[in-house]
Length: 364
Figure 1 (cartoon, rainbow, N blue to C red):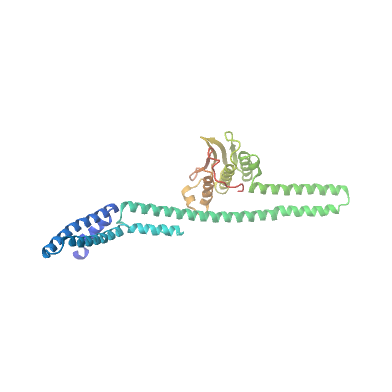
Figure 2 (cartoon, rainbow, N blue to C red):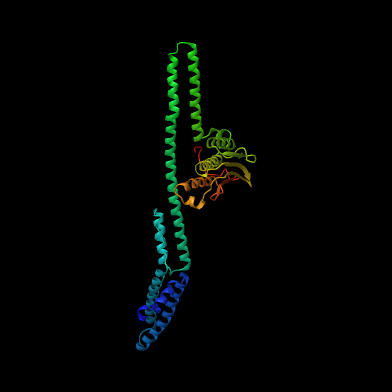
């Protein structure tokens, strides 16, 4: 029983091999070459003396040339074996990099416990980088899918509003025009004209509201302050919470790309407040701090667990989209929230580097 439970100890050869595989490349090559030199000198000298005693008539030059060739061949063979074993992990890394270059982001470099410490660290770093790259690609694919879904949902909403509201108003307008054609007296004409004017005004307001949601003309004409204030007040009026808007220390106009990004961040933040926060008061502040244009959106809603939401494939993509927009203009986005304590979204863009920001275009 004791013999069966005894732990088998590794042999001396196994321990020596494990120690050898744990040596850095430099010491492997150094030890291998030292062994070649020592064994070549000792063995070559011994064989030369032994052969010279047995064959005293043989020329010394022939002995030196013969053992020199044999020593060179053995040296090359030993160095080849040592270097091949030492640099084998580098070949694995090369194959992994080639797989990644061909588009296989799932490739990983093999990790071995017994190898050069520096190479082991490099392998772990490479695999961690590939894991991050794969995670970012999955997030980008999910974000792209959400963008496409959002575009289709927006198109359906616009088509439904055009059909249910604007088209119905225009149909009523056509009916009133037919009635006006058949009018017999001036009083009926005036009444029909007043109804037509009201219907035309209603249709115009519906089109303006739709255009404001898609791309506010105020943003291009008057700038971010006017557009953000108008949208904030309009959203608060529709949803029923109170709003505080402050832009006393904000520059009048910024680069159009930066204004568009900050406007979309405010729009997305207020949309999240409307959907999830159940807030009673929201404050929107546009200011300038330390050479940065800053937008702060703060609510007193229910808050949320930021890490859990960022890991979500649905709610987290909206926050990721906000961060991606900010990164396009060299800005930063900071979100602070916890359950029951409300949420603060802070977006800031350096004012000095706006001209170097990558182009985003004028369209949302």
